[in-house]
Image (cartoon, rainbow, N blue to C red; front, top):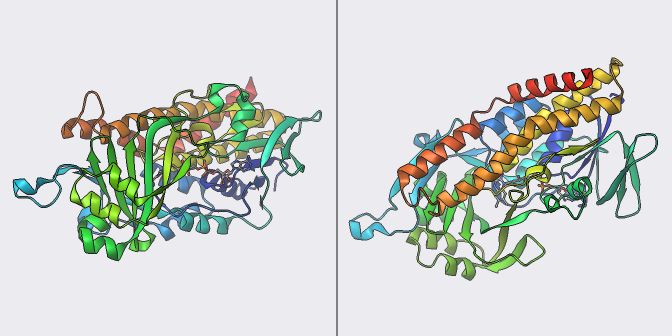
Length: 434
Ligand code: FAD
């Protein structure tokens, strides 16, 4: 282990993949997590080819953990398809068709499908040795001491000292508020005026009602003011469902999720295609309604200040319409791991102090990541409206929706993470040479 000593606040996908990347590179790290243990919700998450490449760059077993729990589309014809896009609204029975009308299929370098979040996290944490994560530690504040160390202060009155702090504490990030000041609008996410119902349906029920093709392969059902996506998870034992709805009101609940009933969802999609009503009917009676918030209204002017930096949703929480938020957390972790490793090498060679090299690493991270990640936040907003037939140009025109979406998705998936890390490390070198 090296002298460099990093505190990570938050043990979600961002914090855990970053810790694994740093441990693999011999960097001392501690994760401070407010919950009593690592935990993820019982829902699905999908990753693009960009995220898979970033997992390779991080190393330390991240890709293996993903591959162990990844469930692809079931049929070989669907092998390269990200989602089958269908009209989820009009019932074409009158036109002699009892299936929803095919709109288009979007081809991706990794195909479709996903992982059960909790299963993925369970596999990831096997690569985190005992003692690295400290639970029941909710960060309240963080200050620089006279000797230059950063002191973290937790809600239970305890403190910890490290060379630098990386906030991986999610959409409601406390580290973000500390970094920009609580009164700053950049400290808070805002409502995107969409909410979602999420659920997992046993695959045997889904195939009995929808047929194997629709249940076992990723589908995106588009309609006016909403869309419903499904893909297989849990080795094909479950069908993941997320049903999004446009909402012109304000979200007044302090929490980002509110209890709801299946009847609420059925009311929201009452006019939709029978397949949608059938999917909703298979959900549990008690559901959660997830408010979709993001950082698109007041994007951060910088992801770092001194030796405090933000990563993952803490820096760039996005609406989920590209299915890429967690993938971008993993890209972040790949770039940050390489930068801190290099900062450590630089300070070990006495080119500059540990503190200066870490400050330069965070500035290089900000330079490398801010533009791409903030683009995602804006692009996801546009994409949500494309799906909901609300885009002012595309409307219900399937060719325009396809062209717009395909271009955006290819930009996400075809990113070369090794170029990002190489450029960021070169930038770090320049900064310490100044
Ligand atoms: P989080 O997962 O929020 O983790 C933050 C951690 O920090 C938590 O463990 C929390 O307890 C801890 N914490 C918070 N505050 C403190 C504190 N003060 N002190 C200590 N610990 C603290 N992304 C995809 O790539 N693909 C998808 O298919 C996808 N689908 C989505 C569907 C929906 C409906 C939503 C809402 C999001 C979706 N996303 C998807 C986005 C993805 O879920 C997030 O980008 C990702 O989970 C964020 O990870 P994170 O580690 O940054 O934050």
